[in-house]
Amino acid sequence: MKKLLLPIFALLIFPLLNSCSGSKLLNYTLTEQDAAAAIRELLNAGARNGSVGNAFSKENVVNTVFPSDVAKVFNTLNNLGLSKDLDRFTTSLSGAATASVERAVPVFASAISGMRLGDAINLVKGGGTSATDYLKANTGANLRTALTPVMENALAEYKLNDQWNKLIGPIKNTGIGSRLNLDLSNLMAAAVSEAMFRKMAEGEQLIRTNASYRTTPLLQKVFGRSW
Image (cartoon, rainbow, N blue to C red; front, top):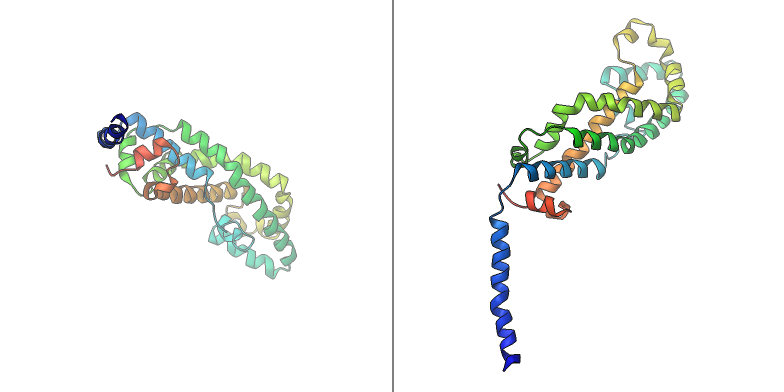
């Protein structure tokens, strides 16, 4: 008799347990503390994961790193017979920029950890790329400054400063050169920063819209529902 009753008891009790669990989930109230922690997790995941694509490939690195007015200078340099020097420079620049993306992750992680979140609940509810946009608006300038030493180390490692100075020597003291920002570490910091923000924005959208990207209990709890 007991053997017959056990399956019946199980059938009766399991729905009740599931109901209680579901009820707790449904009754969860988003707190500012959970929202802030989830926003930081989301941003860190975006910084660590994903890819900047081919933004810093040899074919694209010049247009990614340099503003259009500086990029046009490369055509002038090519016409001056510096095509071999340009090719060597773009190869080195591609390697340095790609390496710098990885080295930028701890800098971004530090900024995410230290940023002030005045209304994290609204950032959770904002959808889209609201968290990345908030980080960029509030820490973007400081991040570029913090990234500059990272870029300087990469430029030194790839011996880019000498190559760059040799390339821009013919135009540096001309009227054109005086009007352009030719500070390579500064330009690199801005380009890597923008690439990181694009990567993080893509990661944020994936976490918000695709359950498989919510890899922690907190991300599942906070972003797994419509508020």
